[in-house]
Amino acid sequence: MFSKKSIYGVLSSFLIFCILFAVGCGGPKPETGKPAITVWHWMTDRQQAFDELAKRYEAATGIKVSFDLYAPSDAYSQKVRAAAQGITLPDVFGILGEKRDFASFIKAGHILDLTPYMNADEGLWKNQLFAKALAVNEFPEGNSYGVTPGIYGVPIDVMTIQMVYNKDLLKELGFNPQKPPVTFAEFLEVGKKISAAGGSASGGKQANMQGLVSGWGEVWMIDCLANNYAFNIMGKDKVLATIRGEVPYTDPDWIRVLTLFKEMQDSGVLANGLVTMINKTAEQLFANGKAVFAFNGSWCVNVYRGMNPGLNYGAMLPPQVSDKFPMTIWGGAGSSFMVNARSKNKEETVKFLKWLTDKDQQAYLAEETQNLPANKDSIKKISPVLAAFAASMDLSTHPNVWGVSEYPSVIEAFDKGIQSIIIGERTPEQVAAEVQKTKDRELARKKAK
Image (cartoon, rainbow, N blue to C red; front, side, top):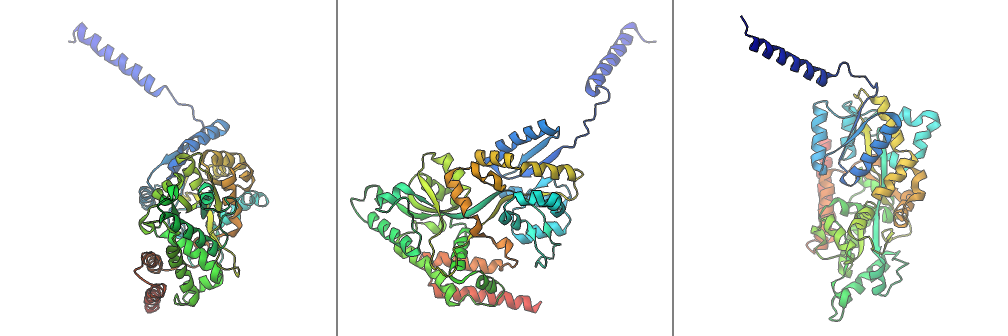
């Protein structure tokens, strides 16, 4: 027999359960029929802008987009690799790495070929974007990676890497602030003025003035400038022939490239401690008016704006050594997104990326983040200094579009060799011989396989 109290207790518990069940489940939830798109990225400076664009897209389409930030870039790359191994990649992601890394993801079936979408409607999407930016995401016919020809990524911004100069400091040194050095000889003359000012007891501001700052503790930036001068001195064909093993690094043209760094150091145009400097330190020095020049990418415009909004500076090409070949700079896609080939939301994801790279959204991103837009029609709405970076896009190239890749050990020997030249440990000739020795060893190893 149950007591009246226990019966009331059971009934009360049952009533509470029903209420909670009704509240928790609310009956059948209405289906929106709209997929949710997840984007993984590493760009800490763009999270707020991405979130705003996600709100706009949801308001226009009913589709929710989540931009999930994972930083720093090393942690992001590890997460993407782990997700690829576990087949748990999101709808949209980017790859931070060399072209061979990109190719490995494609061959493993992780990345959707976007060529049909790019070419639809007479190439409407493709033609809106900078060709140099698309090239970074494209694998041409007969590529050395064994990837089916096609476009596998969408650039969301573009970049060029060149030089910037402080107009006020250039004027202090007696040069026209509207006419930065164009030739390498003019560039070295600025270095001599900086050295003279630094050695003068009455130098004032000039006594603490640095010349060129850059993150040359991160050797890829040395490699970038060295490539610029290699293209200028010997042309693209000879550079690529060297990578293929047909021209040695002991060739006089390569020794000339290496000698440029000795000449820069001897003139005084290179900042103190440049070979161990990280790029963040270089950006702080330039933004605070402590350096005349910086070698940096177009992303620096946003960095300098945050550090010193009143900085009076301009952008320039690296001063040319030769007029035989053009001064070629690294450029192309700054950041790109790929579509997960296994995503259940492929079609909607492609539609979203089309929207993200349309001119209005690109103009908004450019304004908010001060990065060059990937959409050519958005260029008119960017700042003058950013426009100067954009104007050099036609002169840009990038190792990812050359079709051949140098051995990492050779690149390391070359770049660290330049560091040793700058600090006076080795001569250009010694470095050239050491680099070629490394190259010969790699070629012999490949032949033996």
